Amino acid sequence: MIMRIFQVTIRPGKEAEFSKFFHETAIPLMKGTEGIVSVLPGAPHSETPREFSFVMVWRDLASLKAFVGEDYTSPHIDPAEAELVESRTIKHYDLVEA
Image (cartoon, rainbow, N blue to C red; front, side, top):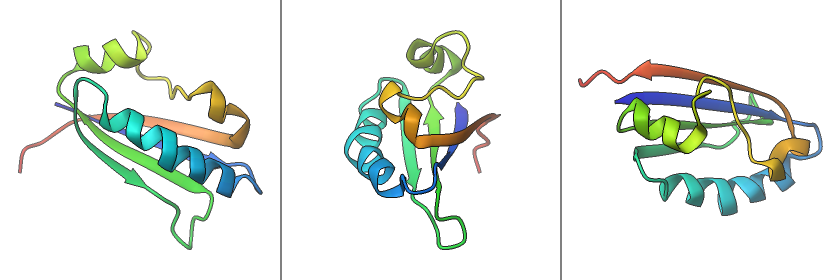
């Protein structure tokens, strides 16, 4: 399984608008995506008020590529959120069963 950690920093003043998108669009989309085993959405904490994240566990690399395309190492975002996002990062790991 592949663990994918996606983080975004929101432009100042756009936190409420992005929060609405995050809760109403992004979370339901990811939870309903074929190939995802687990989705852990992260909302801002007091020390990082403009940062949101997703930790996703994908069944395999083929499932991840089916969703984002061959360039799975780039942090893709929905066009609806592009103007709200200041920066984004993506990291992938092989999930270790504990």
